[in-house]
Amino acid sequence: MLIGCFVFHQDEMSQEVITRATKLINSMAEYKLGGMEGYAALSLIDDNGYPSATTFCITRADGINWLTFNTATDRGYAERISKNNKACVCINSSGYTINLVGTAEALTDMETKKENWLPMFEDGVHWSGVDDPTLLIIRFTTERYTITFADDGKYATGNNSKNPS
Image 1 (cartoon, rainbow, N blue to C red):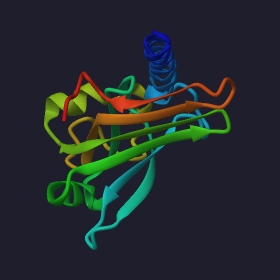
Image 2: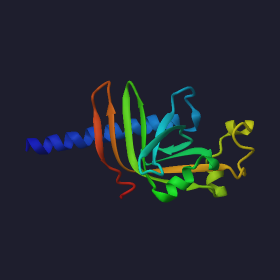
Image 3: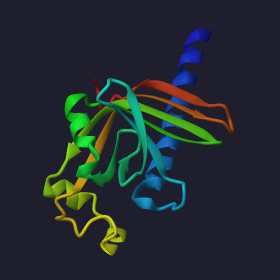
Image 4: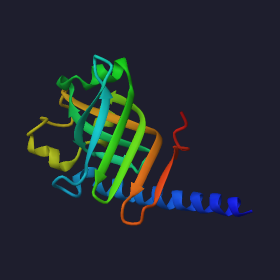
């Protein structure tokens, strides 16, 4: 009976942690926080079969379920993803660590570009517009996660039921 209570408590705690992580990630999307807040390390598999991490700002997100990142087609990410789409995203600070494991897609279709275009991109620094052929959207989809918050020691680990592997 005590084990049943512990499991219920763990599930309740897990849901609380996932909800907190979802709010945190969504607040980072669209460059809302500025500065180094809102950066995520995306690890893709390189040509030698090793993980290689690059930091990106989160363009759009649905909490821990999926995140998108804008980048350029000439950086080699699309080729790496086409060879091996396994990926990991890590978002951390002194107060939390959110580790998401899943798959990445390299997208260049106009509908996806429009969904991930933000007014701040109008400055033309990176792309000439939403129709710029060098604009690449990386969509990361979570299959499993480990989330820890330092302030209260709460954590959650598991498979993403919205995106079963």
